[in-house]
Length: 141
Image 1 (cartoon, rainbow, N blue to C red):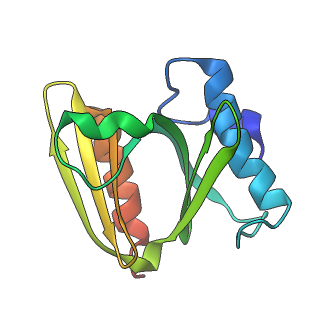
Image 2: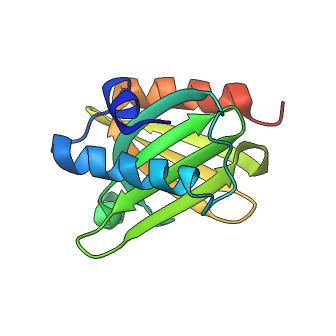
Image 3: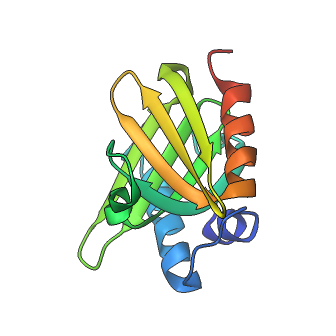
């Protein structure tokens, strides 16, 4: 996984290219230094930048800001670069119980309910549909 490839091939780019690349760099560094359980040679199915929130409903959940997301054959990795520090999370696709898609006029909200947590993602409506189709393809194969 290389930052330039992840960014250039991503379906959602975010508002600021430099910050988007930094978010992808968090995932790249983590995978290459074995901070997380990820195979460096895993094939990337999709990458995107989107707003991430906790489990709350409604517009205020965007408070966690833009994150980089990478979907591989069996994992959803998401990372964010902060002014000081960084965050990385790995969600195994076989631990996903439900995926909910809600499309609005422009944005869509994707709710991913897994065994360990609920993650909400906000992204443009059409891109949201593509993300849900990709995730569903790999759920509990």
